[in-house]
Length: 271
Image (cartoon, rainbow, N blue to C red):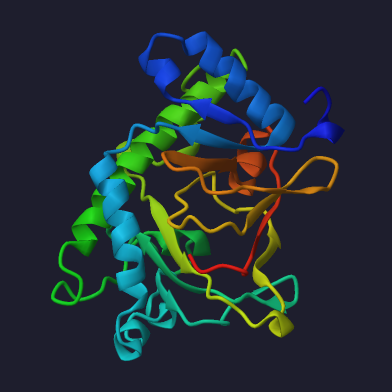
């Protein structure tokens, strides 16, 4: 990969380099991945493997709940924009996305009041399935998000280090103290489609978040990311990895030189 126009694959950076005392090599790989490409696989992330397995096992059971139970968690019922969206409820770039999804977040006390910026409405509790329907689901998702949040803070500090900046340079953009920050996740099902209906699971887009850490819970392909030259590159699932990218939230706030790339998902698979 000698130039931006020749990128044909997403780089893999291995967290084990940090654990083995090879931090400088990790930072070099990190800098290349996000200055040149904009996406990376993070191998051996410091997340409890039992939690990862739990998330993968719970995902199909979540969508297998009776439709009336899922509809009871509809996002329209939440002032915090959390909950369930039926298949085909969302549109990207003028086309219907063929996906069914839930949005969850670590709980927090609502802080929005009349006259405050609308974004403060995001602070608040999620809508959760009944414990009797999915025993252990809330505990698993909450602990997974807490560990993912800790990884996210450390990852941003390492990004800063890779540019020879202070580790805490991004801290001013977090809640104070940052341990009170909410961590959000989207669990998505992309069903198999009749080819005549197209293949847009979700259209080309930039994430609006600060940082995305994506667990691909299926062995089936579908996710693609866009190279700087405009070519779509497969981001095939690799066991033991998370797909990492920076969102527009980071770009708007920090003006860092790291690249943000578009992604989309094709629905020739079920995940």
